[in-house]
Image (cartoon, rainbow, N blue to C red; front, top):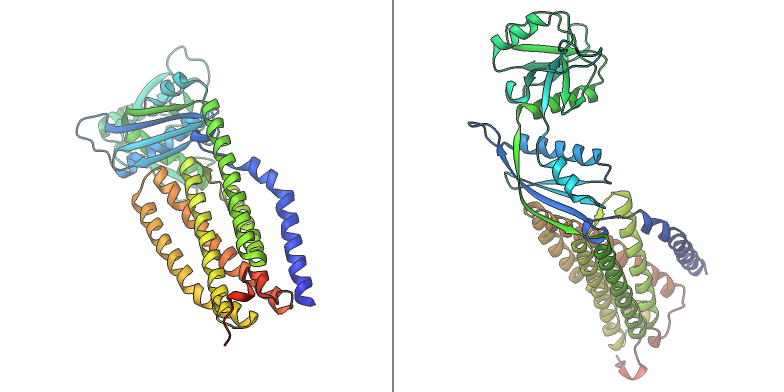
Length: 417
């Protein structure tokens, strides 16, 4: 009796939680541009000055700069990824003005150190003294001074030029700008610096100091971006893709559930509930982990559902084979579950290994497909390999599954021992 009550409570509580939370979860899933509509650009990065190289650090820093620029445009959750050794892919969902995106993104950020020119209003700095290329590679580092205050150390290429600037601006401000935006309170030049190294200190937190240092380093490694490929997905087309995908998924799911219940009766009903729980958990993971749902991700989702169904079919078929051989219900469930476990696990582990290789060596949508597939298989192991069997065992031990026909097995198919 206790097992039956536990079964009923477990199913009812989970069903209620899924029913109440699912609409809210679906609204919070972040959609990719192929489902929401948007704009995608693939850039090839090149050094803007001869003699420089595109390093991994400069590529990552330029990608970070592009992401900041995309956020300034007011777009939601831009996706910026590096590909290979010299490419950056930018995806922005919900874009309505492609010309503005291109105009804003086509050039790398311009870092300048400025002083006040004659006629500038107080707090305005228009005279450019230094640009990003005046600094050595990875010029800025974060440390602490003698008073244990956070400071940023910067090295320049031309010591004489820097000495002249600091001598001329002694006691004055030397402001730091990214494009036309000041990055911090303007530092004051407190000494003539002849060794090519300057220190900036102030009311910086460790995080803000590192952010400023990263920006200065980006300015020291300016990259020229050339657009190699772009595509636009209209909001209407994205919505149409999403609607058609959801419709097809719902129709396919209904047929799967009908097949499982019709073929395996009560175990099929339990398996169907486990599949629904599996789907709900995957949506929850998308929301909590802030994954972006794309068409390749949906393809991985469908593939994972297919593998979950296959796991249930293998398990239930093994149980029915044991039952047809003349074993009792309890013995058949134990033996069938045990014999199918290794087969299902081997299949899942093999798929995880392949998906991990795809994630490690793939790019863009391939990584997304692989990641969703890995997450889904792990959830499938929990819901379909363990949870569904736990529910089935509870019903069997409670004595509520005592007839072969409840498993879809006819009396005439059972052999006498």
